Amino acid sequence: MAKRLIPTLNRILVEKIVPPSKTNTGILLPEKITKLNSGKVVAVGPGSHDRDGKLIPVSLKEGDTVLLPEYGGTEIKLGEKEYHLFRDEDILGTLHD
Image (cartoon, rainbow, N blue to C red):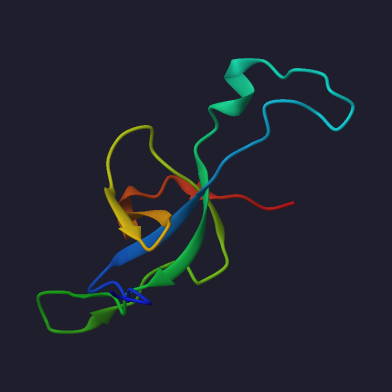
């Protein structure tokens, strides 16, 4: 059983963030709010090479919070946790506080 997955090339391993369906006081949140596809970057690959052989590094780093596309990615299960593997260019953006 693998304990850690290190992506190859320009791939990014993401753990999806599941937003709460209700607030601390018990107010139910609309379904639309809970559908925001965001995740936390767990691991990144080294990057890909261009035609000249130069390494193009991945634009994200471990710990970044990212906005994910509604569809796509490869679902991976390591132990009890589920992750998704995306290409660098498939990530829609980063989320900041």
